[in-house]
Length: 135
Image (tube, rainbow, N blue to C red; front, side, top):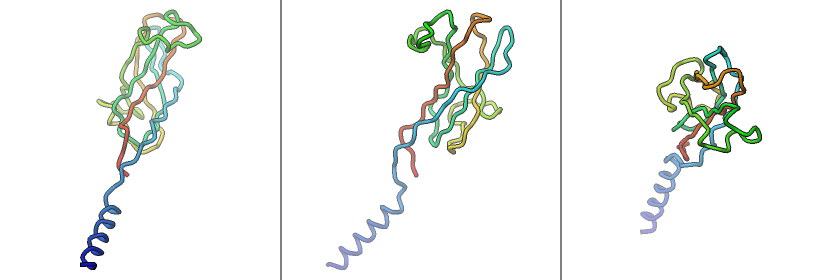
């Protein structure tokens, strides 16, 4: 009887070692990058993102200077416009899940047509990822 119990405990221990653990993932790390392709009617917003989790959302929030107080341009959600990330490392993406979850930095961008021209534009890259990953 003792041998069967020892064998069972050994098998359970081996199984626990073999099953991938569920661990908390680090939240995605996002930073804004300089805008590019600035014209009188459009601008390309850029940001750099590193994640080790599958993204569930990736968008840029932006607001024209005239619509906000400069102290915190993102304080009033009703003044924000959100637009999905359109490319990762220069390649078009159809969903946030297409951004590689490899902890390497990836350039994300999207083109917008701001409502006002010539004024300041505040923007930020906003990613969201799954709460946990398998390791």
